[in-house]
Each structure stands twice: as structure tokens, then as C-alpha cells.
Image (tube, rainbow, N blue to C red; front, side, top):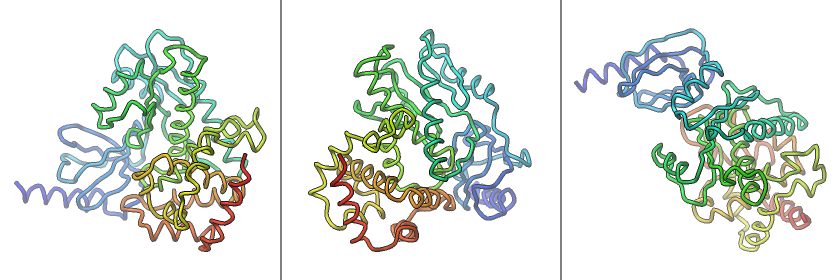
Length: 360
């Protein structure tokens, strides 16, 4: 049995995926994984591991010895249509949800409630594209409708998260999953469109939609390791009204995330001379002091976007256009950063500190 599995795995790799690993592969394969038949585009593969982009945009990661009955099913990748994905989403979630569509979004929300979500998601998508287009970065069109699920209450939201392998605390109001390519949050405002609860809902939407849009337009890539400071720095950057709604809020002060600025000012005296290089090369800070890590990521992203916007977008492109699979080593992270901004970290720290001292 063991020999048969090994022979099957070898055949799988050498005949189905005989070319070098690349996220540009455009053919589709069909394969049974743990008894489930799936179809998608190969994103990354080794002799022991495979990652497929499924036709609804979800990523499936599996071991080659889990695979059976594999074959090429089409010469070109074709995603499900928006109507097909809507039908699949409705069947998955059941009649407790309605699904509302816009230009780029399918939003599942509690059935019977007037939809007040989809256009907000769509507006944020347009703001994201505008932000980067005026900075000279051409974004890709998403391959799939972007999906968001709005749960009726926190209890349902947390139960679903735990059931699908994303156990979360009561302080996590929403999340984006790169594997499913979906945003999940709950209606904290309980149907109200004004007040503190709705504003917290709106802030959650902005942050998570920023992640989702970035990972679907080429600013980040889901199958390439993205430095956490880069992803969270961008997410917190867009929480400021002057970033997500620059047409109505055009001053530099409007682009300041006041919550993160206050946190940065609180933590700045504790940051060592090596803190900047540590953030560039490692995600450790997010494990040790999450609030400080978010604040520093926002502050440095704000500094780069305000003072060196072209280099900032060039750096985002560089981190996104790496080969899929494998780790993003500290040495490579440092090399990618210094290839664009230079390796004089004493100068980077001094200029960054002076800039932030003047932010009000």
C-alpha cells in the first residue's frame, strides 16, 4: 500500500506538474482529495505538497499522498461565474442569509434585512484602486467575486470561526482568510446604521476589505508570504478617512490614523535602535506586543506612503511578486527592502523619528 501511494505521488508530480513551480500556471486539474472531488489551477507543488486555486477562489493545500484520480481537466483556468458562486454560497450558508451583489462583491447578510453592506464594500474597493492608481501602481482585476459574510450576531460568527479552524476571541470583530478569500464579521450594530457600534463595524469593514482587496489585486499575493508589518500597516493606513475617502477628506491630517498615532506615541520611547530592522526582517513583534507592532507598522507605512510613495508601491510590488511556496527568510526580507530604500538604517530611523515627531 505504501509503495502504491509513493508511486501515485511520483506520477502525480512528474506527469501532471512537470514544469517548475509557478503561480502563472493556467491549466486546470481535477483530483480527489480525501474523497472530495475538486477542480482548480495548480499554484505551487513539490514532491510532497500541492496547493490548488479552486474555481471559486479558495485555496486548497494538501499532501500528494492524499490525492487520487487526478488528471488535467482543461487547458485554461476558468473561474465560476458570479451567478454560480452566488448559488454555491446560498447553498452553503442556507436560508438564514440573503446574498447581495455589486460590481465586485457578493455579500451574504442576515435574511430579511435591508442590505446596507454591499455598497459600502464596493465603495471601499473603488477607494483602494483610486489610492494606488494616483501613485502610479496599476492593479489587477480580481479573478473572482469578492465574498463577505456578515453574521447576525457575535455568537454565530464565533461558532463558525471555531468550526472552520479560526478560533477567535471576543475582541476580534472581523477577519479576512487568505485561504478562503472571504471576509467574515458580525453585525455589531444590530441593524442600526448610526452610533458607536456602527462606527466600530465600519472600521472593521475598512481594515478587512483592505486586506481582501490587496490580496486580490496584486498588491499582496495569497500564496506568497507577506511580511506582517506590510499587510497590517496597509490595513491600518486605510482606516483613516483621508485614505479611504480622499475625495471628501483631502488634508494630510485626515490621513492620520488617530488611534494608531496615540499608540505609537505611547510605545515610541520603548523602541530600540534595532526595532526598525527587526520589524523589516521578522514578524516576532506581533507575537510579543501586538499593539506596539500594529502601531509601528502603521507609523512606518504612513511615513513611507507620505514621503516616498513611488518607492513604497515599488516595494509592495516586490514583496508580492515572489515565487510561491517556501519561507520568506529574514535575509531575503532585508535584501528586498534595502534594494529599494537603501541599507542605512541609522538614517532611516532618524528620518522616520523626525517625521513622526511632527505628525499631529
